[in-house]
Image (tube, rainbow, N blue to C red):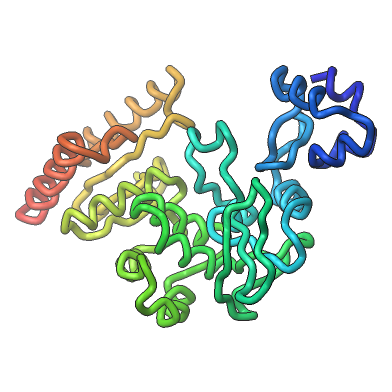
Length: 308
C-alpha cells in the first residue's frame, strides 16, 4: 500500500478520485492499473478510486458519487441505497463494480458515461434530497423502489435495513404506495410492506422472517430477550416467546470461529434444557429440500406447542 501512498499527489491521499483527475495530476492510467493489481488502490465505485486505507463511510460514498453524478441527475435504486448505508450488492457483483443507477428527470439530457446505467424517471420534488452534495432519492422512495425491483428476499432485507437505519416504517411506506399503482413489482411491494420491521438486524434474519410468513406461518418476534430469574441472558434472532420456540440465523460474520460455535452450542443447550425448541437456519436454508425441512419442523413445533 505504500506504493500508491508514496507516489500519489497529497490531495488524493484521503479522498476519492477519478482516473482523469490522476492523469491531470501527472499519473498515468497504467500506473493506476498497477496500483489496483497490487491492492494499494481500490475501486470505491465504478469510475472512482481511493487508496486502500480509506475507511468506508457515508461521507466517502457521497464524495465518490459526487465525482460522477451530474448536477441534473439523481442517484436512485441500489446506488442511492448504497449512499444511505444500505448495501444491496452481492459479493460477486462487487468484483467488477456494477454500473451506477443514475437517472435524469424526464426531459433532461441523458447520461452516456460508461460507468452509469440509467435513463429517465418521473420523480416529485419530495422524492429527492441532497446528501453531502449529491442528489439522490429519499430513504422511503429508495426503499419502495427496491421493494419493486429486487427479488423478494433481497427486497425484504433492504426494507428492514431502511427501517432500522432511517426510520422508514410501514406508515411512511403505506403513504407512498398509492403512487406505485400499476407499476411493475408493486404487488410484491404491497406484500412486503406489512412485514417491515427495523428490529431485524441482518439480511439473514429478514430472509428467515419472509420464508416463515411465505409458508403460511405467523410472523415471529425479532430480537427477543430471554430473561431468567430477573436477568436478561440471551437475545434470540426470532422467537415465538409464548410457545418457547426460537429461530436462530447463523451467518458467517458472527458464527464462523470455533469460539463462536462453542458459545452457540452452550447457549442452545441451555435453551433446550429450559424448555425451548431451537431451530437453526443458515444461508443454505432458503431453497429446495433444506427450506422445506426447517419450515416443516417449525410448523410442527408451533402445532405441538399450540396443542400443549
